[in-house]
Image 1: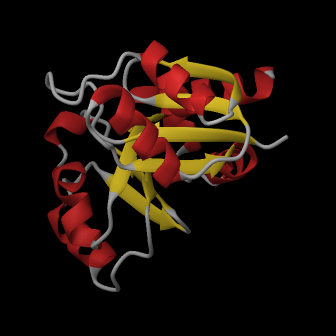
Image 2: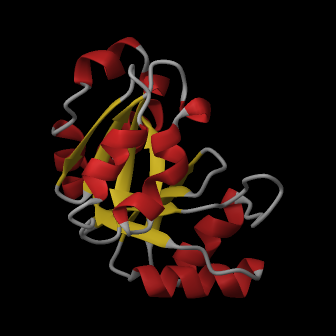
Image 3: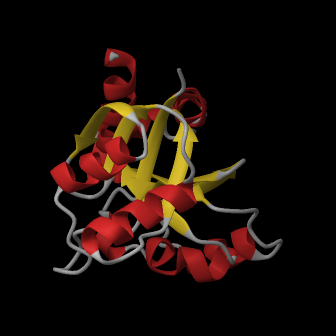
Length: 175
C-alpha cells in the first residue's frame, strides 16, 4: 500500500478555513484511506492509500465548507526531498529557522533571481526540484522571501518548518 503525505495550504490560519484534524482524518478515511494520522492543526496528514489532491480538496469542502489547496506526495518522495536539504546543519541547530516549501509546478525562469533581490542578507534559499528550502535565522515572520514567494516564482506553494517536516517523516516511518 502507498503511504502518502498531504499538506493543506491555509488551514486554521488567522481564524479562517477552520478544519479540526479529526474532521480532516474522517474526510481522508471517507476516501478509502487508512492508518490516517494528523500532525498539529495546520493540515498535515500521513496515510495509507491512493487518492488525489482534487479528491482530498473536495472531501474537505464537503466536510468543512471550503476547498484548500492540497499538496500530495508519497512518503518516500517527501523523504527524498527532505534529504536534499542544503541547510541541514542549520536545521539541526534550530528547526524553526529552515522551511521547506513544496511547489505545485516549475518556477518561472526569473523567480530565483527575483527572490535573490529581495532577501535579507542573513537569509538564504535553494530551489531543488519541486521544493524551495529557505533559511531564515531571524524568523520567517520578517522574511521578504516567504512573503512574496508565490508571486516571485509564479507557482503556488505551501511551507512547513523543519520540525514539522521531521515529525511528518517520523509519522510516515512509524507505520
